[in-house]
Amino acid sequence: MAVDLAMSVLVVDDSRTMGQIVRNLLMLIGFRNIDNVFDGATALGKLQEKNYGLVISDWNMQPMSGQTLLEAIRANPLLQNVPFIMVTAESNQANVAAAKAAGANQYIVKPFTGETLKSKIAAVLA
Picture 1 (cartoon, rainbow, N blue to C red):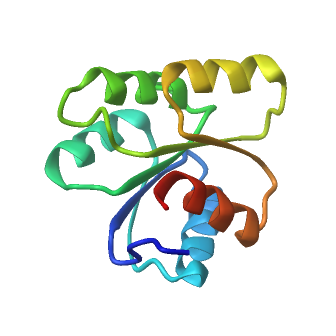
Picture 2: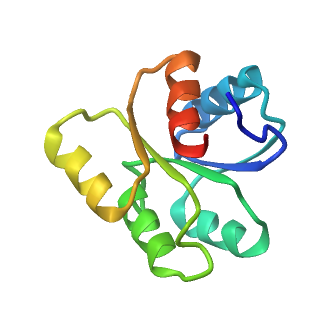
């Protein structure tokens, strides 16, 4: 995987447990600069403060969903090109299509393995 493992990665999930699982999988892949936040509004603030090479976000969050976060990122000229992977427990095609239409680079259905995450990251960044 020809990916810069030193890049900053932002993990957004309102479930602290799932956020920690994603963080641990990223660390197993080799990433070390990982920030976890628990809602979309906080994620937008972090994206204004720091240059992230990748955002991995849950779809179902309150008060700002992953889709709304993605739409806000894509609408911001300074952030619109940040690679974005959407994570969800829902595999229906309508959600996949909505995520793609909003600008998600990849889509992962929970539960997933480290190998799945690694392949999605490689597809987005390589």
